[in-house]
Image 1 (cartoon, rainbow, N blue to C red):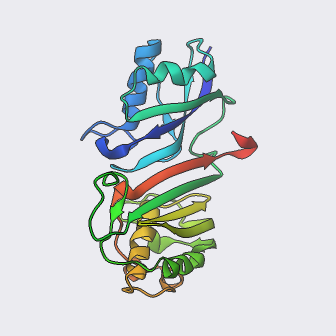
Image 2 (cartoon, one colour):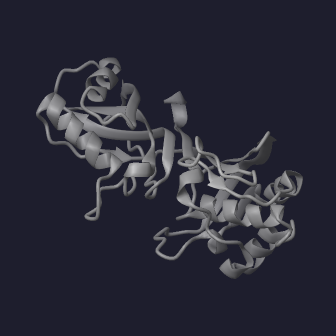
Length: 249
């Protein structure tokens, strides 16, 4: 009899076409399914909480699958990591109820976006940050962020190709902080639309440069007009930090 398991996954998305299996290249989901087959001999489908795009990273992606092999959940990360590439690590495993769903049962997700703000790009952070050489006003970016809080119709914040049934979302936390040359956006909400966080990050860069004013998010929510906002920021600055569920899973 199969047991439903939930794993936490950390990965550098630079070498992958995203979380979900694609025809145009390797995905994180594919690598985990292949590792499960090598370790257990079972072909199982792995369902992720978030379908991160090509080049996007994760510190706390969550995924579920059903497994018949008698491997204790807490030992599963050790087994899988022997069969995974070094840029993907399973950091935790646990049993969950049979009806649990990593995506649909999620109650909150946290993302960060890292901007490297220096005239010259970083040799060390090039794969996990967006380089902006011009000075940025992080205080203005933070004030703009505060306009995102609460429940709104974020229709303007969705890239073409989004398939969400509703564009209503709730943002509980949105902050911008600077440490030296690094500016980090942290945002937490119930769920996010396709490319929503990258659109927010790209707009904040424009706010920090003075190219858009601080009430840009309020105006975009009111009008539903994508053209009110800035560009979609590059994928490599984005990281899925964690996914939360009821009961502290």
